[in-house]
Image 1 (cartoon, rainbow, N blue to C red):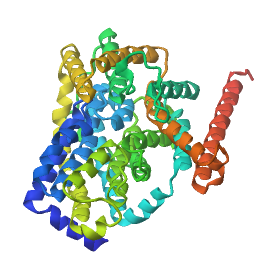
Image 2 (image 1 turned 90 degrees about the horizontal axis):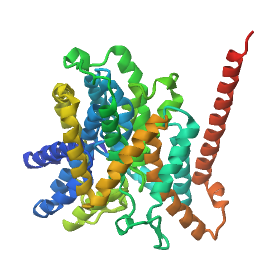
Image 3 (image 1 turned 30 degrees about the vertical axis):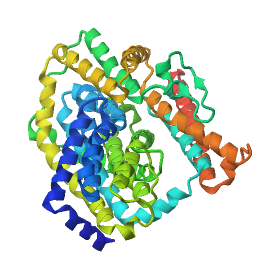
Image 4 (image 1 turned 60 degrees about the vertical axis):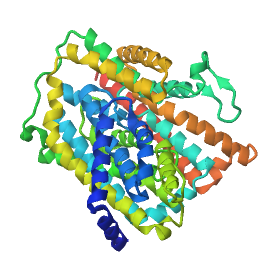
Length: 500
C-alpha cells in the first residue's frame, strides 16, 4: 500500500495537478466560511469546469472543495455562532462561548489542528483499510442502519447542556420536522400546508435559524456589551502543554468515530460530529464544563468531521456507492470523464485512485499552513461593533438560504426558526439535538420500513442479525447507564439536602 501511495504522491506533486489541489481547498474554505452555501452548492456550480479537465484533476479539485469546507465551516461557527456547514453546528456549542470569553484565537487553532489530525488519521485509514472497510460497509443492510440511527438518536439526548429529558424532547421535535414533505415510500404529502414544503424543510434553513438568527436576536436584545478583549498574539493563540494534553484523547476518539461513520454510506460528517460530541461528553470527567467553552468539545467534532470527509470516499471509489449528495456529484464527475467507480477502479485506474488519496494528505497540509497564519486576521472580525455586523450577517444568511433551493419560503422559515431558537434558549431548551433528530429521523424511517418489508414484518430481525443485534445491545446499555446515573445523581442530591 505504501508503494501505491507514493505513486499517488508523485501524481499530485505535478505542478498542474498541485494547482487544482490548492484551488480546491482554498475555494472550499471560503465556501465553508459563508453560512448556508455549503460544499454541494459550490461543487454543483463548478461541475461543468471538469468537462475540460482529466478525471484525476477533476476529482482532486472537487474533493478539495469538500474537505476544505469542513475547515472553513468552523470559522463562522466560532466567531459568529453561524454554522458554515451542517457538520460545524456542534462547534458552535463550545467555540462561540470561547470567542465571547476573548479566546477566539485559541478556539480557531484547536479547530484547525484537530481538523488536520483527524484528516490525517482518515487518510491513513483510507490507505491501509480501504478494502476491509468497504467490505464491512457492504454488510450493513436496512436493519443495521435502522439500529445505528436509533443509537444515534438516543446518544443525541446527551448533547444538550441541560436535562437529558429536555434534550430527548428536542430530538423528537427534530424528528417531527423531518417528517414534513413527501413520504419516501408512498409519495403522500405529510404536514404540507403549502406547495413549497412538498420537498420538506431545508436543513440549511433550520440550522441558520436556530443558531444564526436566534443569536442575533439574543445579542440585539442583550444589554451586556460584546466581548472586546481579543487575543491576537501567537502566545495567546497556541494552547499550553496542559491544553494539548487535554485535547489529545478527544482528537483520537473523534477521528475514530468519524472514520467509521464516513465509511458508511448514508451517514457522513454531520452525524459523525454529533456522535463525537455526545461520546466526549459522556466519557468526560467534567461534563458540566460542556457548553461553556470546553476545548474537548471543539477538538472531538472537528477531528471527527474531517476524518469522515476523507473516509467517505471509500464506498464512493471502491463500491460506486455514494454516501450523500456530495459523493453522488463526485461519481457524476467520474462518469462524465468516462470512469466507472467500483471494485475494479483500484486495478483499472491506479493513478487516479491513489492520486486522489494522496491529494487528501497534500490538501490537509495546505489547509493547516493557510489557517494558522490567518487566525489573527479572522479574530479581528470580533472588533467590529455588533450593531454594524449583524445586518451583514442577516444578508449573508438570507442569500445563503435562498441560493440553496431558490425559495423565498425557506428564507421566511429561517427567520421563524430563529425566533423559535431564541424562545427555546430562554426556557433552557437546547436546540442542538433538534438538528440530529431532523437528520436521523427520516433515515430511520426509511431503513425501518425497508427492513420490515424485506422480513415480512418480523421485528426480531433487529436482534437476530449480528451487527444490528450488537447495536441494539449498545442502545439498551446506554439507556440503562443513563437511567442508573440519573437515579444515582438524585440520591446524592437528596442525601446532600437531608440535614445530618
